[in-house]
Length: 142
Image (cartoon, rainbow, N blue to C red):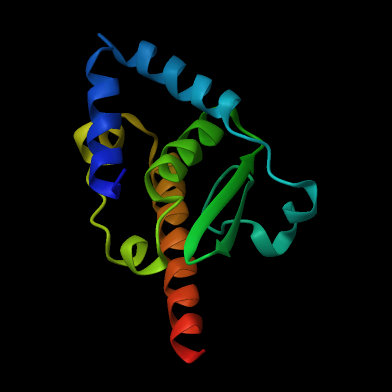
């Protein structure tokens, strides 16, 4: 599934919910379903700066595909990182770096998150794109 298709699927998933309480519950459930990050990656180096909660993000390139794993000490934040992982994980670095991310606005997250959570979400996306750029640059050197 392409990054665009993943975003469209998330937008469709969110359309079934009537109100924001249901959407928050869904986001929390996504966080609970997020596969656990290997404890060895829960280090200060993998902490995302700009998040009010602690969010650890690990990126690994396998056969030209960038895979992300993450964890957070806050349930809603864990759900948010789960959403961005659904969209960006499993794609080549170039695709991730160049992807236009529109699902956040489309599902209404920007207007329903506190400013600190919104900044945290943007920091997660920025870090994932930075990882993609770094792996892309590294592969061009080889």
